[in-house]
Length: 107
Image 1 (cartoon, rainbow, N blue to C red):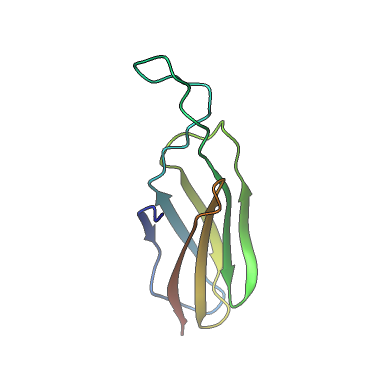
Image 2 (tube, rainbow, N blue to C red; image 1 turned 90 degrees about the vertical axis):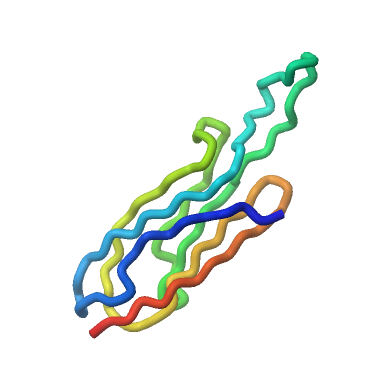
């Protein structure tokens, strides 16, 4: 299963500059506590981890719980030191993985 995402970050930055990265992923984040219109429990389905690497090193990670709303949004800052890939990985409880890569060019 793939869950659509949106990533907002600059494509270029000056060496040493702090840049803001924002990401949102469309995911129901079902807690397992709600019931459908027939009274049947909707199975738990949440994103378990969000991980971001830059140049191969982890720079941001979240261990999510059912307390996070549907379509979770995350924002963080990153210091641009070298040109490299920023890789975003979302893993849900079912083991589905979504991975996206953005190139950051440092001048």
